[in-house]
Image 1 (cartoon, one colour):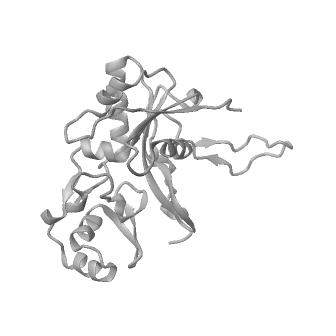
Image 2 (cartoon, rainbow, N blue to C red; image 1 turned 180 degrees about the horizontal axis):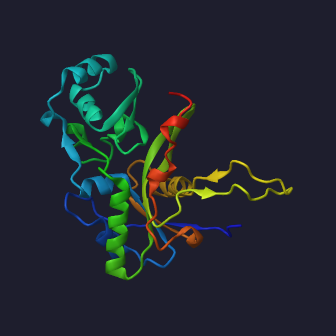
Length: 252
């Protein structure tokens, strides 16, 4: 049984720009302890990695122009969606659902203009190219600065099939068990658990995003404290390990 945990919002972080160190800025405002989990909003990682794009710099392909007519969205945005995706799963005026090149399924390939400087002028933000690698890099740099290697999650808000609203989810992680396999354990009445996997990283990300907020709160990172049992010395397989294999996709 977990006795409980705390989510500590980090204030004083700047608006990030290309080349800034997410790890260094977090270390400057937080007293990081062994067993901590640092949860970082995807947007500041993308900003620091220079993943902002001006739509007027994009040349749409005929396919993107066709999608723009179908969805009533900018053709340049549709081109970026194509560029960031490995598969188009659903295209309609209401939404564009894709399988991102990272393997995650997301609306608009995770491309967003909210909380992006210049968003009203056509600047959008793409996901990090490899969120798991980004999480490992942030973890390693925090350790080099502080001597402590917290787990690191990169979180974004994702929609869910058949349910309204978004929930924070881990798109990158390092040093935390993304999944906990409870199969073989027992329930309250001694029955053996047959199919229970706990999505640990996503559950932590969901709690963290509640503390970060989705609007003008200005809290792009938090520390989750009290879940040290999930923190590992090894970086681990990352958030990619939670992706269901394509051959198990019952809705393809």
